[in-house]
Image (cartoon, one colour):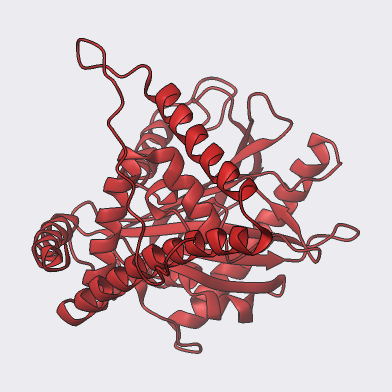
Length: 389
C-alpha cells in the first residue's frame, strides 16, 4: 500500500492560518487544533481501513521520519560544537555558551528554567552573587564605623544606633549584636571585631581555603567545591557540619563570591544558600535552605601588615523545634568559640605552620574586559555558525 521511504522525511505542506485585519492571530490556537485533529483522524481512518500489519507499517514510517529528523539535528549540533572547540579555548567557550544561554533565557524564561531543571544544569545567571551585593556589604562597615565613632544614645552601646539591634556578647576583640527577623522566629547576627596580631590576607585566605578548614574545624564532616563560574570566580560549596547533641548533622549548599578592592582597601566575602542539581538532599543530613553570610575586612594599613577590622553579618534557619531563645543561646555561645578557632588557624598560617592558598593573589580579569572578550567571541562564533546553516 505504501512504498518504502526509509531514510527520507515526509513533508506535509500546511497552509498558513487565517489572519484578521490588523495583523493579529487570535484564532491561531484554534486553527492549529483543528488541523492536528484532522491529521489524527486521517491516521485513525487509515489504520481502520487496513490490517494489523499495514498499521504497523504506517507507524514504522512515522517513527523513521522522526528518527531521521532528530539524527540530522544532533549531527548538526555536534558539528557546530566541534567547530567551537577547535576555534576557542575552554574559558572562551564557556563565556560564549553563557552569553547565548542568557539571550535564550531572556526570550523564553519559563521554558529555559524548565529545560535547565530537566537537564540538571545550574542556573548561574539567576543564582550568582551580583556586584550590587558586594557593594552593599562594603557600605555596611562604613555605616557601622560611622555609628561607632559617634556618641551613642544614652543607655546604648556604640553601633547600636540602628533600629532593632541589641548587644548580646561583648569581649575585648569583638562585639556581637542580634535583631529579630520580621515574620520569623529567628535572629540576624552581626559581629564587629578587631585583630592586631595577624594580617588581613591570612585571615581572608583561611576562610576561603576549604582543604585547610577540614583540618582546623573539627565540626566539619564534608566541605567541597562542587561548581565554579569562570566569569566571576564564584563557587558553589557543599558543607556538612556536626550540630550539638541531640540534633542531627546539617548540610548547606551555598554560592560564594569574594572581591579584593585595592583602591578602597577592602576585602569582601558574600555567601548564600542555593539549590544545585549535583547535590540533592540526603537522609544523612538535614538540609538548611535559608542561609546568608556577609563579611567585609578593612586593614588598618595594608593587606600584609598586622591589624584590621572586620564586620560579619549572618543568619540561617537550622530547622530546629527549639524556641527562639534556645537558638539564640546556641549562636551566642558558639560564635566566640568559632572566632577563636578561626583566629588560631590564621596565626598558624601566618607563622607558616600550615601552607594555604593565597586567594587575594589570584589574577582576576576586569568585568569590562570579560564583556568585551565575550562580545567579540560571540560575534566570531555567529559568523562561523553560518557555515552550517
